[in-house]
Length: 202
Image (cartoon, rainbow, N blue to C red; front, side):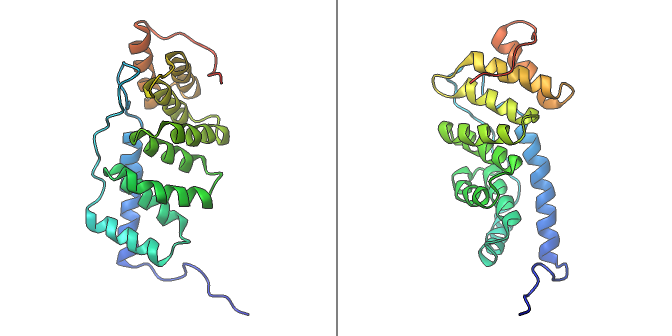
């Protein structure tokens, strides 16, 4: 029995638009990711500016594409990221959940979901996703940084754990921009230049 090949159609204007959206989401998502999401007070709520990634018409196109092909996980991930980065974070959760169910061992997807949950102050769920991202990729400086943000900003947060994760961010990729953000957070928390510490504990 012959089976119809998937995604064998010629490129269309719609496909090109989606490709452009992917590039914009990745660039702006990366910029959003490396900005601290909390202040120096451990009980300060996360307050990131909303990033307008794409007009509502483009979101509608993505939603239509996903509705027509719900097994297209890549499009589901793009839609979730666009919603999360354009101020519609609550709407993004159901799409992230579906994508994670399809790709449970994707550390970048877990990280993106964790960031969205942090924006919505869903602390417990964010911890689950970020911790799993770290298990899947224990060399990611970005994941370490966001675990530090989680520890610093959640109610009753642990500043020692936050410091440890920020130091781990630096240890994992000292030359990255996210490491510079981690150094800034350490300076703010310590009131002094950073010094090497052990990796974060449980």
